[in-house]
Image (cartoon, rainbow, N blue to C red; front, side):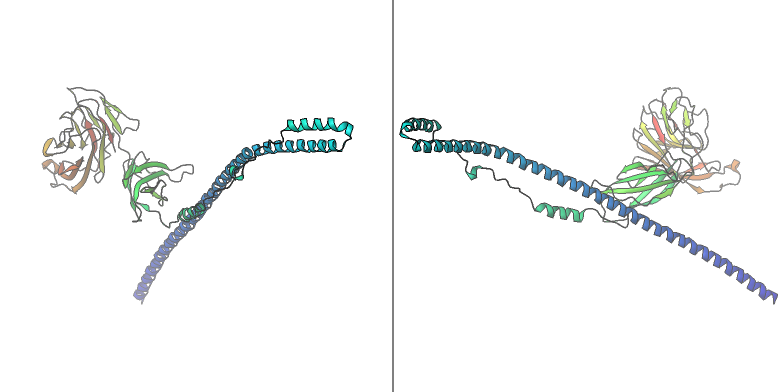
Length: 444
């Protein structure tokens, strides 16, 4: 009987545990639903506010433009009216003056006719002289109506139709932005951001990537990239710090940017790649990720190593050449197991590298395959993966080894080979050596 009780007790415990897990999963889904609802309502509120603000600004601007245009046209009417009425007023004054003289002459003539015989001759003589002086046969010219301005307003009724058509197509509301961030990959001192189109009908001409620190109230988004690529490595990020990333796109032939994608949070746990300071013949940038060969010595070719073994298999290590000097076959860019002092080139044991002439060296031996020569603007990449995790022979002193598959890329070509190292390594140094000055290398 106790065995049955124990079985029932065990089943009850398992059911309780399953119920707890089930409740936990449901609570997580409820949290997800709440986040989704918050996003829908929050973005809808923001969209409403943006629409109201935009159209209020348009209404204000349109009213101001129409008012300004009306004022301008009314001013033109005022000018035409004033310029046209002035000569008419002058003509009216002249005619009214003539009417007054004629009235006065008529009164004098009638008075002369009514006077006695003794005064009639004098008054009639005076009247005749005055009539001759006034020139009763001279009349001012009054312009014909066809010669006088007839002011009218020409208004294009099609403007309202054009406005109606443009306004009906102005603005749009979308439930999803046309691009979304697809992947965030941590890299030393940075994050590789990849994005993709989710609206296949949207023809993107350019993309715009921005980022900012997460949780910083005063932090503003900053442009990280604008261009046609769909991925970008954002560098100079602090390790173990959350950053928000968002992307938008600009359509073919358009000037405005699309809505932003939903921000994604990413961070890197990998310290940035840095060159080792204090190496003779090299000057480093403030972030120590750029090295400049500034001293030329034919008898000595110092190696500049990384500050620490920060390159791990599975990552991509990139050397970007921003300035180039003279090429020498002893030059090298590559990775190595240790930072041997005194060596003059990475063309040595326990190292793989490429020379500036394109030759590839594995443990000091030149391969038959060759890559393009390195010049200004070249980008050389190293990718490695572990082929076997355990030594081929339990006794390393008797020839045991570890195998790494190495891919070196330069230009549009790459070489792939297996590299045997005599010790277990989970991280590697990188380095460079140049015989001549003028070489400038960015590592990331």
